[in-house]
Image 1 (cartoon, rainbow, N blue to C red):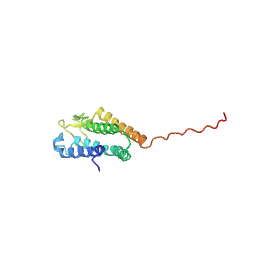
Image 2 (cartoon, rainbow, N blue to C red):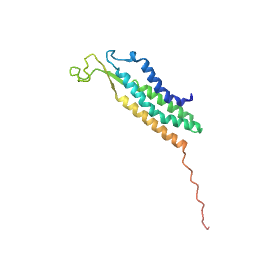
Image 3 (cartoon, rainbow, N blue to C red):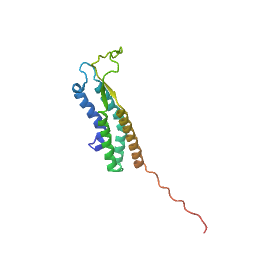
Image 4 (cartoon, rainbow, N blue to C red):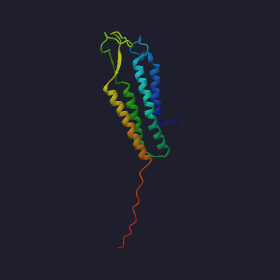
Length: 159
């Protein structure tokens, strides 16, 4: 793997994953809860981003190998993708269970336990991330495979 800007597309989810794994104890909401919910949610989101970033990463590499594409567009794509990924980590809100006196058999949580919930911003940022990647894939396909210019047909008029 080269140390190019597009390498951040694959490196950032992994770096954030290992940072969350390293700071697991500090990120836990409740030390008595066996598996911290924010850790699970964040790592699932990060693992979800690796396949989302894989195809645009390959498109960056193909365009770089063929010396095609605009440098500013490529830079903006990587910067916006990383920004949306990091912003997604801050969209969950900490809540208490809706009805603490009525626990379920699986999660019998007392009143002092906390939970994480995705907000509307989580879904908006995920949708924006997916749309950004789709738009970049279409952009890179048009750059890599430009439409052929039609040759004008010769005229056979007898003027």
